[in-house]
Amino acid sequence: MSLMVSISGIRGVIGQTMTPQLAANAGSALAAHVQGGRVVLARDSRPTGPMVRAGVLSGLLAGGCEVIDLGIVSTPGAAMMVNELQAAGGIIITASHNPVEWNGIKFISAAGCAPAKSEAEQIIARFQSGDFAPVGVDRIGTATPDDSTHRRHVDKVLRTVDRELISKQGFRVVLDSVCGAGGPAGRMLLDALGCEVHHLHAETSGLFPHPPEPLAENLTELCQAVPRAGACVGFAQDPDADRLAIVDETGAYIGEERTLALAARQIFAHRPGGAVANLSTSRMIDALAEQAGGCTVHRSAVGEANVVELMKTHNCVFGGEGNGGVIDPRVVYVRDSLVAMAVVLQLLAEEKRPLAHVAADLPRLHMLKQKFACPPERVTAVVGALKQAFAAERLDDADGVRIDWAEGWVHVRGSNTEPIMRVIAEADTPAAADALVARVREIVDRA
Image (cartoon, rainbow, N blue to C red):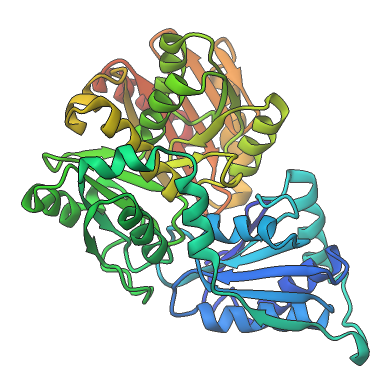
């Protein structure tokens, strides 16, 4: 198994590439980067979290940091706390949706978001070169616990919606927290919004009851639970709670891609302005911006840091990615499942219609997503072959390569977090999307 090192952080397999020494080096690298300042430290619920945390903490303390230990919290919650505590940076130990044998180390900048590419490269360069050193005994760091993350996070989200309007609806909701870090804050938010909550896999054990990525094939239990409970919606968090997938009242999987589209429908109606989505995200958001009038969508390379950088450049009202991530800068410049849940409930309260009917009004486009194993060192060759084969088409090579035809588009890129390549296509019909992917896969498979 490869060690994945990129601007998105470090991920590896426990017992193979993710080791205590590696974790200590990552902590030391951030300590050197922030010159021994205040740092927040958090982890998701994976059983291997305490081991990785111990390594990271030792590196931070050896570098002279004042560490605020948040315990098990979500990624957006940890990033928000960097701002709340005026810290110089942070680390959350998470492998997001990867299988349980993986764990990872994700850096947070002083701005309370994923570091921009240039800053992330500086931290990674320190980590890889060993450009750090322990401080003397008189400057060894300290560690202090802080258990206020969930309350602060929920309070900030509540201030972005009409709490009274939502509470009046008495929504019945099923929440699947996959035994991840988002369960406590997710439940706290839904309770505060007056929802009757049926909570699946609420415990923060990290023993995932099903594959943790919130895809349709992994959420059959949630799809069955929603109509059985008579709920109006089902929400599925991933293990670090920065992504949200949605199930409607009939038990149909609405998906991750439409999470951002539903948010766009509500936000554009009340706060028209700019938004950012990445190159792999559906054109639904573009169509919704056009329908709303006065709204603009900017496209970034894949990756939260890239989305956020463009959001700040254009002073956008929101942003996100088609993996179920919605970013509201009023809360935190990080994808946030709590923000997504609150916005969708606000939309349902305003529309006063079943979710299936609201979703049916979204632009009708069909997306196809595939992934396949690919060593990182082969990604450049695959992208080069595609650029050569489709040189006559409209290409965007800001991140892998996106190929646009009149009938749709395909985006092919190497993952920053797994040794795979992703192929995403969108067209007006499933058959058209299949045909576009087939054209591309012929070149990919040869390369």
